[in-house]
Length: 442
Image 1 (cartoon, rainbow, N blue to C red):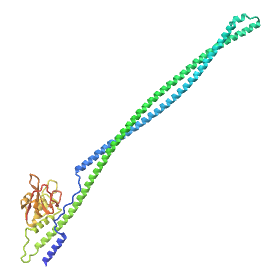
Image 2 (image 1 turned 90 degrees about the vertical axis):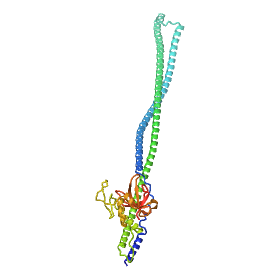
Image 3 (image 1 turned 180 degrees about the vertical axis):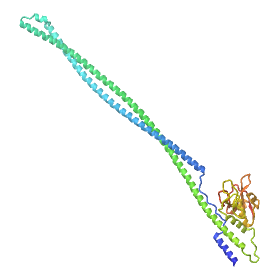
């Protein structure tokens, strides 16, 4: 009855475990994980390009300010040119008015010339008439020839008339000459002033046009410089956008990788818990079977064989999650270690790599020596190509002694106490530094 209960318990245990508890699937291929150097280079590229954009933005601001100044100067020059054009038009109008005044003065001059001619003609006629009539126009000639008192009075009045006529003709001639001289002078002065004003206005217009051309050329050159810097900034901005996008992509990759790592760690922890629980259950079943009384001539459990290998692996896997402690662990279980120089407290309890092997193989009654190098020589050496679950695998750096030991558990996996800060774990079999031969104890 007791034996049938043990068999039933083993059947239930195997059903719960679903087969070999040491089978661990290979982890899936991780997503890309950019290195810290890649992330730093990407961040530096973003910072550098952002600095270039900032510098070009400052240049654009300066150019914008200078452009405003040049455009204002151009507007002022154009305003001056427009004023010069107005002044030129005014000078042209003044010249036209002066030309008209000259024409009017010419008409007056012509009239004055006519008046001179008429005055001279009247004077000539008077002289001619006096000569032809033989009249002595002198005062004695007229008065001495008087024949009577009345004739004397008449001759005296006629003499006054002749004198006044002659004086009038001479005055008219003189006035006509003065008027002509004044008209000629006024016409020349007006025309000269108009020509001077027009010449000055034309010079001012030419200077204004030249200033406008220079200001326009400066404004165009400034506009080109502004466009060039704007285009350069657009290119650098494009590079910045690409750098930011690339940096974001790398950081997104790192985030996805970190998430994947957490997921893998959680799944690994779940597998390790399941393996540990299964190992503990198998160990409990084996212990129960070992403590049960043997019926008849049933043989005692053998030290070696598949059951012993499974007990060794189960005992090792029962310690999954226990912290690494340098020098920790013995045939009875986890223990305190020795100072590791990393500031770890001395009261920590756990395993180092060889201590875990001591405890694991104790389940089969095998007392291993301490340290990995000694454990390498504790059993039979087999090539790595012939690995079996329960074999110990070892690691060393070139030219140095063996420094690490782990247990191969099948399916490309090994169980180890890795290093300070980590826990007993199951991980894929590493090939870097792997010693070409393993040690088999059964």
